[in-house]
Every structure is written in structure tokens, then in C-alpha cells.
Length: 179
Image 1 (cartoon, rainbow, N blue to C red):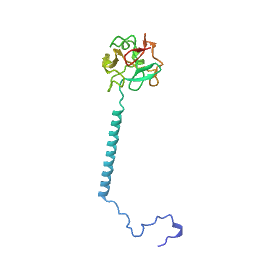
Image 2: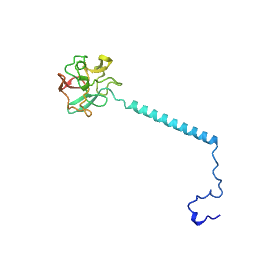
Image 3: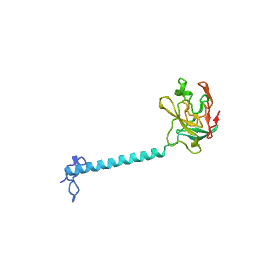
Image 4: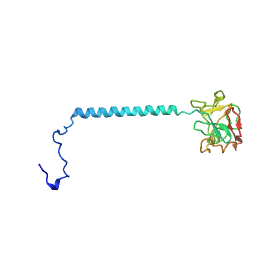
């Protein structure tokens, strides 16, 4: 049968000769298809979760690391930000916690696993407990802090800053203050 010229190209052609038209889907086809899609979807989600957990486990950085700066190699936290001591602190005693607003500007460095990166002496790492149960890392007896003014990793602009009645030096791997 020849189609009228005015309708050519507007009506899709029928099935090619020698082929049967596709059959209508029955209930078993749709249920099986939905099951296949669900299984593939769940397997994909499981794979993505497993890969995410593996990546997170591999990317865990030590709580304390060493970083080369213009002041030499100093301690940094797991994000690479400079770690500070406070000259008013006593061995394993946090004086900043007793000064109003001090911990708001100088947050404590908390413990995480692993603790020590390459070059950091694990035997010099300790923890103290502050009021409220907060745990703070110490290094060679110095309670450790970061500074909210630091805007990039290994920044040394605020090393030896005078604030809250004391200085804020950085620390070396031996636990010596860097001023």
C-alpha cells in the first residue's frame, strides 16, 4: 500500500518485512525488569559506599605532622594548620581554658587516630582533660592549640603573637618552642 504524498514522513513506517512486531509486555516481564533494575541499583550503591569508606580510611591524616615553613619544620594538625603552645600554660596544664574567650580564639587540638605522622615523636604526645570532658593533645608537656586567624595550612604569621597575657609559639619535633 502506498501512502498518500501528503502523509509521507509523518507516519512512521510499519515493522520491516520479515520481522514480527514487538509483543506487548506481560506482568512477568515488568516484574523481572524491575527486580533487575533494583538489584543493579543496590549493587551500585553498595559499591559507591565501599569505595567511599576505603577512600576515607586512606585519607585519614595523623593528628600531628611536621611541615616545612620559613621558620623551619614545625608541628601542624591533621589539616596542615600550624599548632601553637601558650607560654602561660604549665606542663600538662591548660591556662587558656581559665581565661575568658581564650579558647574561642585558640581552639584546642583534639586527639584523633593515628596520632603521629612521620618525624613526630609519638612518645612526646599526651592528652589532658579539660572541664566539660574535652580532651586536648599535648606535645612534650605543652597543651596544643590552633588559631582562628590562620587562613591557610602552615601559616606562620601569628607565631609568637602576644595575646591573652602570653605568647603563642609554634613547636618543633623535639618539643622546642619556635618564636
